[in-house]
Image (cartoon, rainbow, N blue to C red; front, top):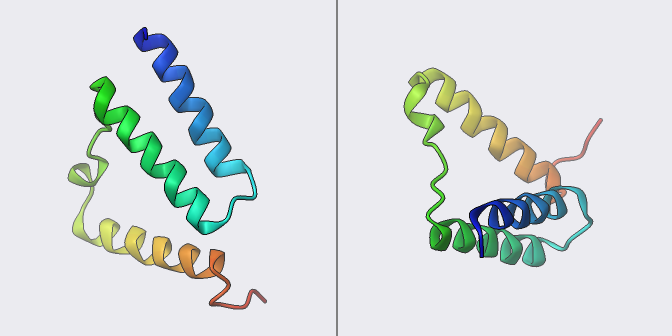
Length: 78
């Protein structure tokens, strides 16, 4: 498969993963498929964490945890 087609497939899978109402298990499985496709095709996601300060990384990790808890309905939204 050509790299352009692989890019298009990965982009579409990412779009489906982020916009559809998937169960957490299905979303996890789809994300795993996306990662495997990226690994097999030789695509490497840039390490954006290397370009930010420790304080920014801590804030991002806090927000990731907050959004994950909101997604899993552990925190009630006001």
